[in-house]
Length: 102
Image 1 (cartoon, helix red, strand yellow):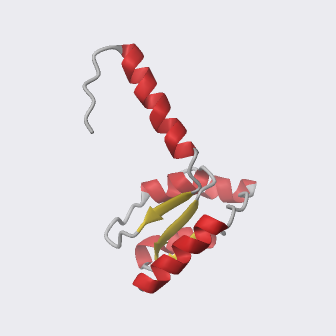
Image 2 (image 1 turned 45 degrees about the vertical axis):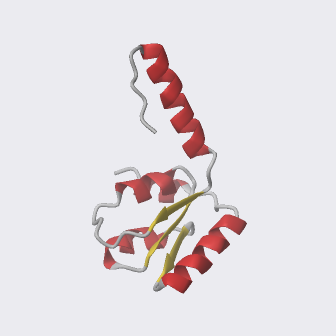
C-alpha cells in the first residue's frame, strides 16, 4: 500500500499509526545474516522487544541481552519465534540500556 501525503496533518497521522503499530508488538524478527550493523535489532532491543535473530557473528553483540533469542536452522527459527511470542520480554537494566545507546 502506498500513501501520497500532501499535508503535514496526514504525515502526522501516518507517523502516529506507524509508531503505534510498532510499539504494540513485542517481537522483532531479523533473520538476516548479511546485515552487519543491525541497527534495527538494537532499536528493537532498546524498545524492550524480544528479538529473534540468527546465531551468526554479526549478531554476537546482541546475544548478551536476555531478550535476544537465536537459532541455527529453520526449525530453530520456528521454535525461537514461538517461544518469543509466548514469553514476555525481560526488562532491561540501566547498564544494558546504556550498551544500546550508541
